[in-house]
Length: 122
Image (cartoon, rainbow, N blue to C red; front, top):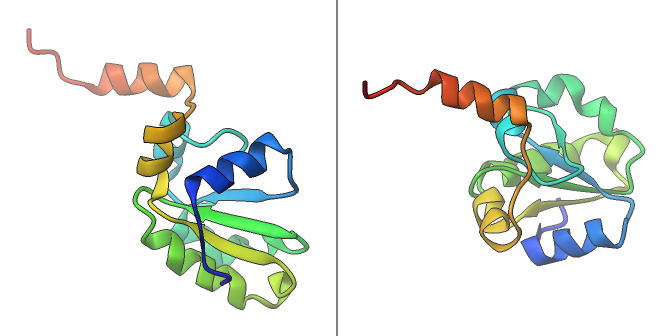
């Protein structure tokens, strides 16, 4: 792991169309509901099985809700032989901080599903 990266730096990488892979380690439902644009979902519990999917990447940024679990994910990815040459960072402050500064995107279907799951007070 190469340390942490700020949400502003992640936003700039995306705006510059940099060769970076944003890896969101939350569960699929949370990812569908809200995420950083152009990020990919690799839930933490699947990371060790899917780590070879990241092989050959130049720059990987892991993200989670608050920036804690993503540190562990970045360490795991950084220890993998296939990512030895990659810059691997965790986004500090997590999606909470990024979302407060720049907003997040989500699927309309996930929004509708979450509304449908809510219990009506009537």
